[in-house]
Image 1 (spheres, rainbow, N blue to C red):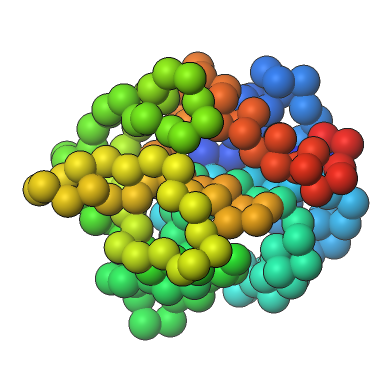
Image 2: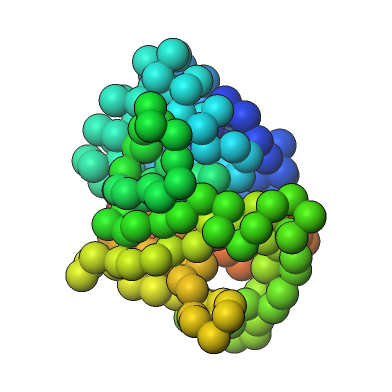
Length: 198
């Protein structure tokens, strides 16, 4: 059973992607719904809203503890922000789950009108992935335990847009908004590597 954080954002799209791969999912809105999960997806959406709701519903600390304890997690777009240890351009009261030793910048690629699609060369995938970037973050720096899986060049600088650290996988783009399930397959491989049955 894979949980999908159901506070806000592309919850249904992630559940559909996992269902396409034959995986059962459960929506997580309360701390007790984390029990028994083999992985947790943190969807794209709006990170400041997710942060506020996670605090209000008592989910912030339980999810932090679960990820720190080795629960596999996949974060996409706002989910990447929620998994980052450090966020630039966030609200002063914004909190994250953490788990990725990265510094990320919110809305780094621009506003809604600057959203774009581009092929992304992801390490471990045999052909480019159709990246959908909507008010997307990028990663400005990574710690020593973080593997950069993909970058996008902007203004002559390569920006990290897909990363992995242990059981945590994150993308700045929205794989759930495409028909390509390979990022979700990578996540399920991470779950299997943790000894789960997902």
